[in-house]
Image 1 (cartoon, rainbow, N blue to C red):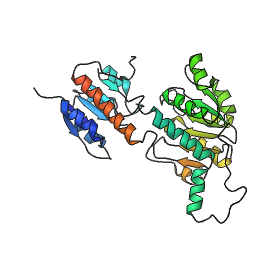
Image 2 (cartoon, helix red, strand yellow):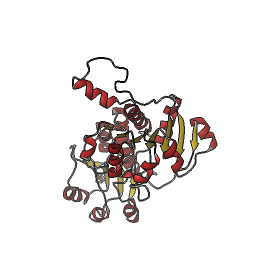
Image 3 (cartoon, rainbow, N blue to C red):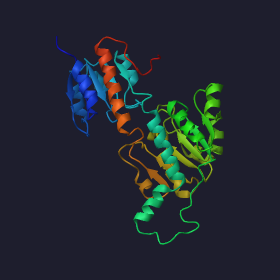
Image 4 (spheres, rainbow, N blue to C red):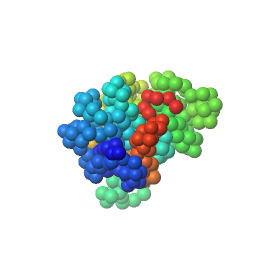
Length: 323
């Protein structure tokens, strides 16, 4: 009996490939660049499953050209690169990799918070440029992190992990989310539910942990940024499309916002050149979950979803399916 054919669109860690090859016929594209649109469309024609990444855009037109496709395993917790509605309508299961990247992404969010608050990137560039001549009382002074107020927008797994880190810095934690947490969880995290307006007005640092969808795209714009303190900083390790780039750049240039730490951008890998001109921004190339252990586990989770489907088992981590 022939085994089902699985497309792996780009480089993944070897452990995931080994698992897939034990159970399926693998069409592996060992490239960091991935497949062009036409090549991806052609490759999917004969595949029952695909292991893809956030740079692979899978929409209704592509799905129409893949009549045998029954499973999409996305190596990411976010899945805005996939038209889930179109997939579901065609009987195609979509999975993601939640949970495993929570702690590494929270680490990175807090690293950005510290780097922006204490001007770490600016200071490091200044030193490398040979500018350090002597110690000075006001040299590259930043903002206090310990004891500051942190506003978390989106209190899912990663938002809660950031809140736990904030407790070690004696920060006051405010949050806003679609659903308020149980009182016991709020006590554990030392977090207080507030309105969006209250969060923006009170926070010294605002950290974004929202999914990107029709309701959140561009939801951090000029109006929200105007509500923030001029001494405040914005941290985004979620999705670039949450933020209006033009509004954020204007606030940073005009000094109505003190700084920003960005790991994600609306048109990755493109970065608005305006950011590159600013010293009060720390820019990273979407490395929130980039530890070897986490990225390996993400690849394995996607492979495990495929194997479960091949075996006729309940497929774990289905997008939009409870349990």
